[in-house]
Amino acid sequence: MREFACKSLGNDCTWKHIARTEELLADVVAVHLRDVHGVQEMKPDLIGKIKNLFSNPSPTEAETAEGLVLKEYNCDLSPGCAWRYIAQTEELIADGVAVHARQEHDVKEFTREMMTRVKNAAHEWKGMES
Image (cartoon, rainbow, N blue to C red):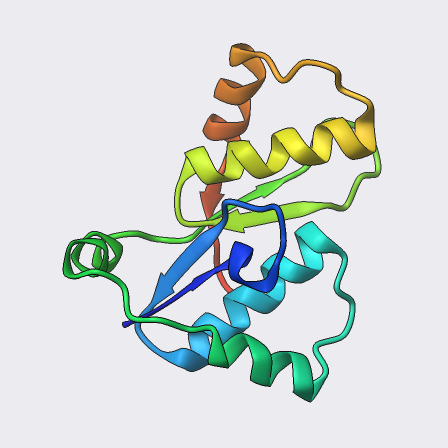
């Protein structure tokens, strides 16, 4: 098991992920950086930097991560928005959507009702092809 925290790259972001293999973790990190932070190209130096920031999760976090399935949310806040967010929990997805809603859809307040709607709309991520 390996872990990556987005804040370790210097981003003001609470997202982190634990995966069984470094390859899977690198793929999930790439999706997060693309969809949330606008990183369009994963250059070899960035991939190397990310892999150097991988760490070992605590035994408790690793055990918890074993049973988690990645969830995906496709933005439905505005017609034609193709943004999506992938994370381990509905809570992390709601956090990411709140940031996106403020930055891209001028949503001033991410209400409890909006959070519930986002959590209910999250579904299992089927992988890079989805």
